[in-house]
Length: 361
Image 1 (tube, helix red, strand yellow):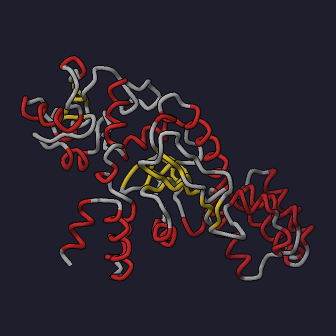
Image 2 (cartoon, rainbow, N blue to C red; image 1 turned 180 degrees about the vertical axis):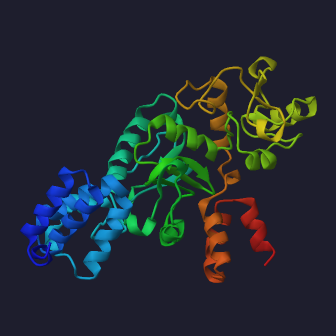
Image 3 (cartoon, rainbow, N blue to C red; image 1 turned 180 degrees about the horizontal axis):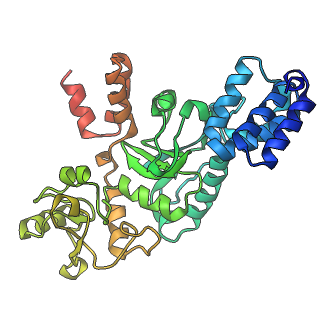
């Protein structure tokens, strides 16, 4: 152990001994010591073992700190290792040839973002799968070229049983400069979600999961039980969403039909009970009788839901743009000039609440 203070070979010997005894934290300690003494094999082992024990983000944070403190030789780190951990040497940067242009035009434009190589590769797979899908490729939805950012700045969580959460404010400059209304972030590990103009996916996401979260953009609500907090907020009798009615009163059905299917026949809508509002002690009704992607995201898409998606996309000004949410973040920080610019961007997309906010200045 005394030798390992100055000799990388001794540190590697200690690391392998601890590894052989499955004493992983101690093995990591000595691999790191070997790395600081200039042993590239020690660094490789340290990075692999820390990812196994603590995840990629923690590993990236450790490596970034050691590099900034001059405790590691940058020459020891390969481009592949940097990409895996999301420590890009030129970031943020645009990944060429990662754009998707819908043949039916761009009623809605989405900006994909990734922070690690797994996310970059996952986006290419998702983009190709979207283009090949019989339903999705017909939608007037476009995706800009992917933006690649450093993982330590986006800082997405890696907890399997929890929703992924990131430092979204790190993307403010992209939101200010970009021509899009929604963000798609492929980073972190955990549960996918959609909130405030941001689709959040893990870098293992399937096309079916992306489709489910995208349907939330269009106002579709989950057809499985919501949390009590969400159910109490959403499940108000007399109201409705794209796919759900929160009671089955004739007036509610008529109001939903006027907005969503004014030309449909009576046979087009078949109300079916769902468990969405269960936690609030209320009953919700979906407008189809079959299990579909809003209940189980791997299932087939009903024809009526395809029609509803197209109808939602015919009025993109009703979909909250991510610029409106970033204006809210700016307001929290009392960054009033930034708030005004972001609100103007949201209003420029026709979003009513943004137009109203500017009128009341």
